[in-house]
Image 1 (cartoon, rainbow, N blue to C red):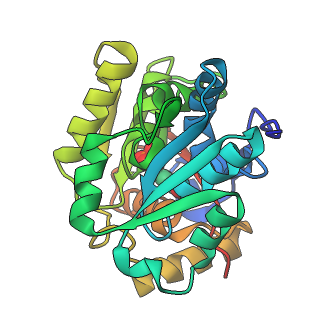
Image 2 (image 1 turned 180 degrees about the horizontal axis):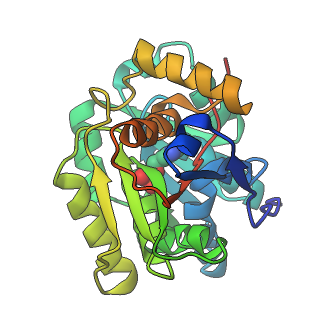
Length: 293
Ligand SMILES: *Cc1c(COP(=O)(O)O)cnc(C)c1O
């Protein structure tokens, strides 16, 4: 059985001297605490897809991811708990013979069958989206489809009293979370996505097509920051690590590095550059948990 989520996730107000000096309020929406086994924003995005799978009597879930994909782990955990089969198509044929890293090991332990493919096959399979058999549901990379966007729209819906001074900030990997957050805003609030990879233009197109697929319309409530990906996906600089350590010291929360710390640092750098006007209330969505050390 799939354990229930713990909703609404906590909203935490931080006491941070840099933000206080600028007259900006900083809050965390603790989506890292949403679910005991399906991590962070992956639960938000999967929940409507799982409901759909159960309603339609699906037998299994197939999806795609890299060597450390949180999405693969999340699908494996959810499918295992629901008694569904799961297949993970993994980018990198060389990983097949290597000792399993902690992430792939966890996916396998939850019953996921891993299929290792070359980078070029991976790209081809991603676009083909072929189901391996009758009754299988195929989920895109990162889990971002129309249902996922609607799931992520529940994040701002849990925030009371949003107004024009509110800025919700989240990381952008495939754009599903930002698309949902932007669509669920009320009261004239705005959303800012922090790209964690090089994707100027491409990521905006992704968000727009997700909005079209989920709602049949566009939204003007959002934008993407492309200045803080730090060189690309998975690039963790010593400066980023130092920022994360200092953040943990100040606030007692160890931020996940590839997405959450990048986003928090982007917000801090924008603050220090005077790009956040006094009176702004910033709410950063903590989309996931740190990797095991
Ligand atoms: C997968 C992931 C994201 C990316 O979300 P998208 O909806 O793909 O943009 C952000 N943060 C964390 C912690 C993640 O694991």
